[in-house]
Image (tube, rainbow, N blue to C red; front, side, top):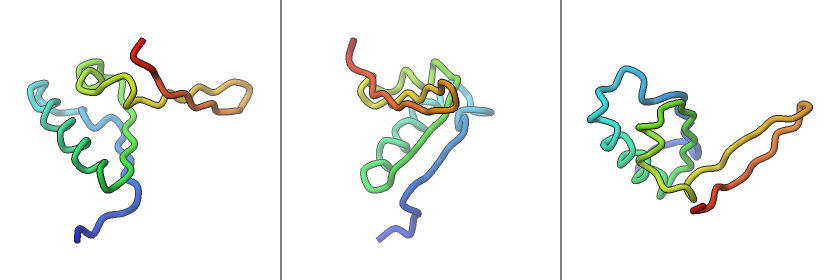
Length: 74
């Protein structure tokens, strides 16, 4: 049994990585997320492209209220 927290939060985990490492990072995130909630914040299109649209939840803030939306294939 792995000793991990219930949630792992990664803020721009792609920073400082070689672009070729993004697919490895995405594989690690995907494998870890099977047992642990993983939240990633990124501005990297290359990292985001490693995931399917339905794997995203977009958070918008309007008038101090956050709304969460899951993306669809469209």
